[in-house]
Image (cartoon, rainbow, N blue to C red; front, side, top):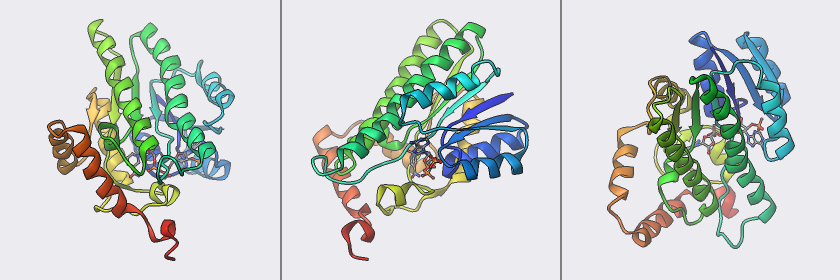
Length: 256
Ligand SMILES: NC(=O)c1ccc[n+]([C@@H]2O[C@H](COP(=O)([O-])OP(=O)(O)OC[C@H]3O[C@@H](n4cnc5c(N)ncnc54)[C@H](OP(=O)(O)O)[C@@H]3O)[C@@H](O)[C@H]2O)c1
C-alpha cells in the first residue's frame, strides 16, 4: 500500500507519515522543506519525496504527475496554514496564498486522484480540515472559511460515492487544537490544551482505514461541534470571536 502525504515536513503530516510507515505503507512525501524531506526519506525508508510549493498551481500538477503511475492507495491532503487578524487588515497576498494551499491544492489533488480511485473502485482520501470547518471564525475568517470548504467538499463527494456503492472512501479530519508549528505560523496561542500531533495522526489513520467520513478527535470537540448546530449563526460568531480574541499571542500584539 502506498500513500501520498502533503505537508509531511511537520506536525500532523509528519506524524501521519510515521504512523503509516509503521503499518508497513510505502510513502510519497511532499512539502517545501527539502532538507526535512531528505531526512525523513533516510530515516523512514520505503519513501519517495518531491519538493513542491502547493500555493503554485503548476507545482500541484507536478506532484500529481510524479504520483499518477505509482499506484497510490491513499491521498492525504494535509498541507495548510492559518492567518490571524481582522479580515480587512490581513495581508491579501498571504491570504490568497493560504487559499491556494488550503483550498485550491486540496481541490485539484482530490479531483485528480478521485478519478483514478473511482476507475479501480479502490482508494482512500484523507482530507485534513479542522473543527473550524463547522464554524464561522471572526479574526481568522478566511482560514475558517477555507476549512468549511474542505468539510463540505468532502461530505458531498463522499455522498456521490456512497450512492454508487463505491469502495472508494473519503475521511475528513476535523481536529481542535493540535500541538504543531500551526499556531506559530498563524501568530496565535491556543486557548485550550492541544492534543499531540501523534494522537491526531493515529486517530486520523484509524478512521480513514475504517472508512469513517467525519473524524473529530476528542469527545469535547465532538460535543462542541454537535451543540453548535443549535446555536444561531450570529451568536456562534460572537462566541467564536471571544475565543479567537483570547488566542491572540503576545507576539502578535507586540507585547514581547
Ligand atoms: N495544529 C492545529 O491546531 C490544527 C488544527 C486543525 C487543523 N489543522 C490542520 O492540519 C494541517 C497540518 O497543520 P499542522 O498543524 O501540522 O501545522 P504545521 O506543523 O505548520 O505543518 C504544516 C505543513 O503544511 C506544509 N505547507 C504549508 N504551506 C505549504 C505550501 N505553500 N506548499 C507546500 N506545503 C506547505 C508545511 O510544509 P513546508 O513548510 O515544508 O512547505 C508543513 O509540512 C493543516 O491543514 C491545518 O490547517 C491544524
